[in-house]
Length: 260
Image (tube, rainbow, N blue to C red; front, top):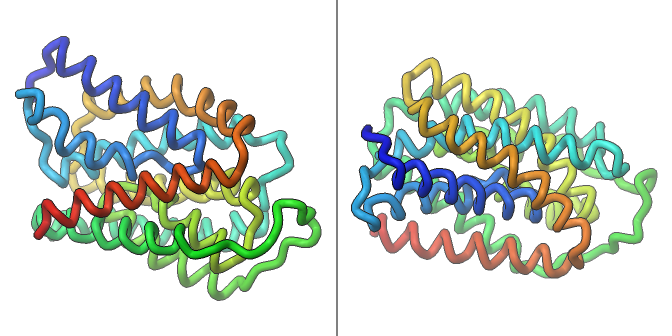
């Protein structure tokens, strides 16, 4: 991989834009950065990444992007520790299995898993959400078995594509577990941070990470993610959900067109 100045700038911009969006809508960023890394460099005549390399870069970048997001939300009162514990432990196991096991998959298989995850998430985001953000922290209750099982399955799929799983965790928490929007955004960042630990460990052990590319993305993420979180706090939650749904649907359509 040759790192020209233009290539470095393009990587930085992909990382910055994706991380700003991730901080704003509570996703790890891979929902936007995975296709951007896959398609933009070759479109500009630069070196192309393989699906395995993209998933490896995404895994490391998400690990650092979520640190910034969780830090920005730490004093807001929106982090649900019980939810983070149950889903975090489960998704850590699943993400390591997916991250490590992805070495045995062909590129088309990795993209196929991404397309499936994005499609499921897009469909779930368009299901009308019942409930209110007026609910207090003490009133929040959820099915712990459902949360644990769905987090494990999400972790396996997300571990394969290096996505940490926030883009599917968010609709699961909103629609299935009925968690208030702002609590979902904050808690999902904490859960994806835990998930990205497992995913990154699996990718490093199997040699799927290009560290220079990952470092460029990390620097962009550390700058952009907190900015995105601060912007997200000033935007109506319905607008946040709408933005997330559009992003996920657009990505799902593009990936399926490419796979098919």
